[in-house]
Amino acid sequence: MEIIFLGTSSAVHSKERNHPSIALKAFGNVMLFDCGEATQKQLLFTNVSPMKISKIFISHYHGDHILGLPGLLQSMSLNGRENSLTIYGPKGLDDLKDAIYHLGYCAIDYPIEFIEIDSGIVEKTDEYVIKAQRVKHNVPSLAYSIEEIKKPKFLREKAIELGVPVGPDFGRLHNGEEVEVDGKIIKPEQVLGEKRKGIKITYSGDTMPCEEMIEFAKDSTILIHEATFTEENRSNAEEHGHSTASDAAFIAKNSNSNELILTHISTRYGENYAKILLKQAKEVFENTKLAKDLMEVKLR
Image (cartoon, rainbow, N blue to C red; front, side, top):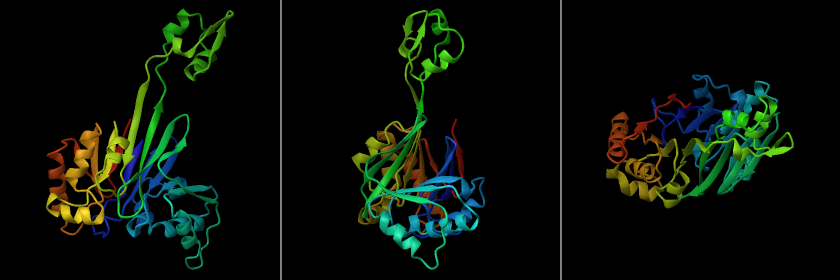
């Protein structure tokens, strides 16, 4: 898996920080989480091809999270995209769809499916599960998680001991199927080890600190959480439905997350402000990093 931070600012961007967007390369897919203004230009500085994006997840409909979407969709059409694209978002996605298709002389010639979602499982395959969770903002807003489904370890020697011949039956057992050997049924649980936890990435979107976010982020490998304000600006955070860096750290600590990455950084006071955010978060949760535009994080 590879995470690429395309934009890490909050409502107003700066020379150093673009509007919010995160690309995730995983499981043979490229997924985009939010699509702020100029996201398609940020992609030019990465190894991510817009044409490879298969899914886009929108957290909410404030402009800093969606205004890059119309341009990105039209550019992919101009470049000859034919593959379908799926866009997920909270209630109101149909209105966004209508706005995009009626914006100027819109020309999008490939299929796009717009799917409104709420809390729960968004998509599940043999390799991963994607979930959404309603969080607390001043408009309907979703957090997202993607978790690897990791198969238990296959106990090869145990299988051989039970008489299973080396070959296709190993794969069938590892995939949860029973096999017959000399008239005897061998069950998967006889040759599989304990369940293994896969990588889990959680993205908060915009939210105030809430119990829902703590539970949703439980045992995350990486928690990407908004950190718009410092403690000195807590009243601003509460007024506008955001979190402080300390709030994000509290959620990381109480969700038993392994690592916290702060994003959605207010640019009102420049990069010195960002350093204060990092310092305040680390006082609560040491394993914290500050996201920067075009920063890449690889997970194995």
